[in-house]
Structure formats: structure tokens, C-alpha cells
Image 1: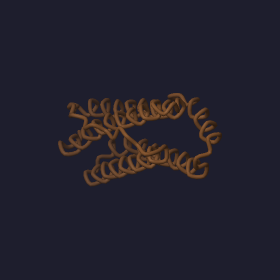
Image 2: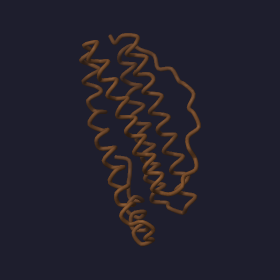
Image 3: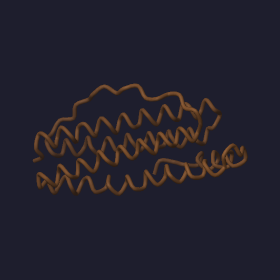
Length: 164
């Protein structure tokens, strides 16, 4: 059984995963308004992933005989200067998620909670993928600048993304 402190932190992460989905939906909305449907799709799928992540925490907390409690979600940033700004914000958000997951791992290690450490390892691996995905798109956007053809091609490619 996880400690009350660890259960509270796991619950906070559950709520943060929901908030992450909310943030990505705001990014999707910005992209859709810019007629960049592929970029919007990328962030819609990203939001769906965050909800899947939240459910992993939900199920794990329940498996530990804990109780998930819902918290309020703050309003996300809704206006961006550019696609580069959107992806810089997304990358910074993923770095924040990584730091939160790492703190959870540290707490689980302090408490010798091997079940939670095992559970969190999936998120540790996932965060490397998440950060690299945002960095890769950001590098592409930086390289193409205002090249409409490049943005169009990337938009088309991101429109093919589906929830795996």
C-alpha cells in the first residue's frame, strides 16, 4: 500500500495529465483557427494521449486502494505568436511533465515502493519520446521558417497521426 503522501502526489499527477490534455486542446484550437488542420490533429491526438495517461494513474491509484479526487483545471494559454511558439510551449510543458514524473520516482524510491517505481517506469520512457517528438517538429519548423510549402507538407504529415 502506498503512503498517503505518495497517493496524494499520484493523484496530483492524474489531475496534471488531465490539465495537459486541456492545454493541448487549446493548441489544437489555435492551429485549427489558422487553417492548419494537420497541426490541429497532432494536438488533438496529443490530448487524447494525455487522457489515456490520466486513466493509467486513475487505475493505478484505485489498484492501491486509494481514491482519485478531481481538482479544478486552470485556463490554458489560448493565443500564440506562431507555430514555433506553440511547439516551444509544448516542449516546455513536456519538460515540466518529465520533471514531475522524476519527482514521483524519487518519492517512490525514498519510500521503497517498488510497485510504484515499476508503474512509473513506463512514464519515464514515454517522456523521452514526448520531448523528442516536440523537439523534432520544432527543429523542422525552425529550418523551414515561413516556407509555405514546407509548412503545408508538415501539416499534411501531422494530419495522418492517430492515437496508437
